[in-house]
Image (tube, rainbow, N blue to C red; front, top):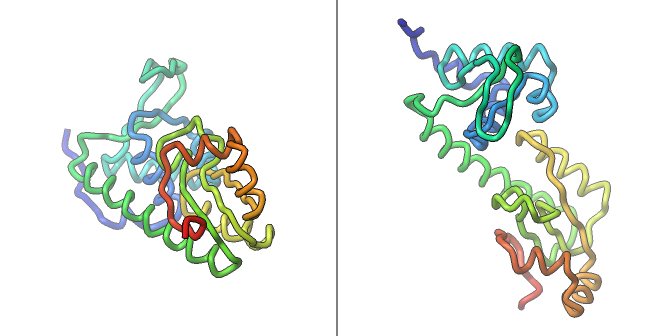
Length: 201
């Protein structure tokens, strides 16, 4: 089978495409249905179908019908998509998107700091592959809820999934840490990436 020539414009060209690529590269062992993808990345069905077609033609994604993949049993008639790990740029693209995630997180931290007084901020949960932790970002400090939601919403628009965050005033954090609060200690003693820590000074 003769493959079509590689075209760079097929790879990057729309937000939907970038979100799809980010999702597939971060979940390279998973299979996704079209409607599941529209929900996960918050895009229109027609837009997702169009970009899936582009990525299949590019050979980054594979399109299949039914069967079994990982632990997910799939309908024999239902079409699903997986990332093609044999694609020549697979590892390079995965590394690139990981670096993009770092830049986006740095932007998020900077914007949150500009909106309030932050004493502690840590990425945890899905950011460190710890889905058992109930929150993805722990923020300690004083910041308006509306301002924070706006910043988080902007961040979510650049990544292929929703995030859970916890905002806690400094006094509450110190009290809950003092009494060994179960929720808080699951975060502090678990896997995390601390971006701001003014509490230990």
